[in-house]
Amino acid sequence: MPYPAHSVPYRPPAQAQRRAVRMVPARRLNDLTTLSTVIVLAGLLVAGVAILYAETANQAFAYPAPFVGAALAIAATVEARAGLRNLVRVDLFMLGVLYLLTFFEFLLPQDPVPPLVTLEAAQTAVQATLLGFAGIVLGRHVFPARRPLPSEVHFRVSPRVTIWLLLGCAFFGYLYMLLAVRFDIFEMIYQMSRPRFSQPWTRGRLGGFSTLLNEVGLLTYLLPPLAASVFAQGRRYTLVQRAIAASIVGLVFYEGFAGGTRNVFLTHLITFTVTYALLMPRLTLWRLLALAVPLFAVAGFAVYYLPEIRTVGLGNFELETARTDSLFVDLNLINIAILTQAFPNQVGYLGFEIPFTAAVRPIPRALWPGKPEGLSVSIEEVIGVSGMTLSATFVGELWMAGGFPAIAIMALALGAAAARWNRIGAVATTNMTLILFASGFFPAGIAMRSFLGVGPTLLPLIALNLLTRIVGPRSSK
Image 1 (cartoon, one colour):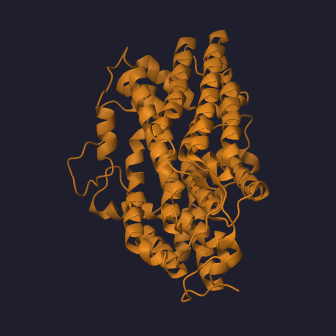
Image 2: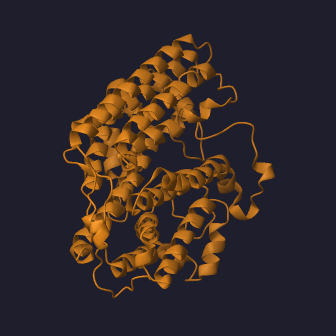
Image 3: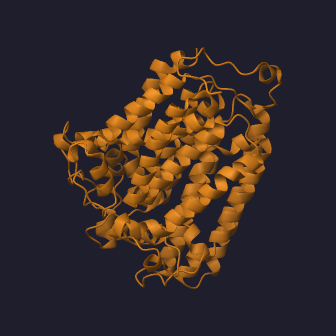
């Protein structure tokens, strides 16, 4: 029988309270992490040797792809020996995202790389990317695990607090859209199905006071983990509360899918999955597979078809006409290779301009009218395109800052930050703390795609942290 919102504070059944919770010693966790780091570094070394046998740029990108992928898979298997929950870590997630954005698409045959990308540039791009992987796996050892990680955790939470947070984040997150369509929800849903940048709420290039609410829209990234906490502990919520959560998260996934932006949709999918997996009463391999397999299928469909959907709009999308012979993610390795040819031979390194631009990006232009518009030399200018935004992962952006040294320093910092954030998940005792931990996967994934774009993604995390401090004690009574 579901627990009503006004029910007495939740306590686990007596049998669950008496059951001893198996703990994994922190030393064991760190030993497994060290072993997995050795495996990844060995795989990166083999991948680095493989590119020496390449005769074309395509081969330079393709040869190392299976070695890096195999090393990451073996390392994850080693980490899983400490329990399945040990795989739900930010550092492992970052490694997986970076692989998806770089080598994954070259596991399958690709069209010939443009002639302007030389073999030497392709090899340099691969070396820079391998350095990014190495920096992350080494940097995570700056903050080793300090306390045991429980294999089962019983979370206490007030359903009423969770639902009110869900409703509040949904209202303020979608407020700028509702204002643009005069609170006509059906019109808002229709506008979401139109081609990208054709919606009435699309912000201008620079923004101002009228677009300040668009920044508040980042609160929608908190909705999937909040909704997942409701479904993971469904017996504690009423049917009406579960229906509210389902409606809100359904709108979020629809918006992400119809918008055609893969990193947005996949972020929603991942934060939902992470929260659900960690809050499941008992996480087993079969339960994890039952959750992961269909979600991986959805993610694969999104990676393949969303570029077409964002161009024509979900309402005009036809499955047959969108088929292609090759898998396209972002071709980031090609972009990185072009950047290595331009910096520093044609354009001097940008130095601290990269971290400065990333740091000030969250500041709304309405509050700082004179904020710099962007980099003095953009990725698009170097590559020679206009009217579109290109990505080159944090590897390409940091190459623009200072080449190999800049990539190494930032990769180490990102790995250390991931390990520090993992400690929050390891000691979480309430669902609010766990949702906060799962929400951290959002900026972690964006950091892999673009270090310059990670700043705004920290805003909803800060907001949730403040809310956790306010309602946390009440939710755990």
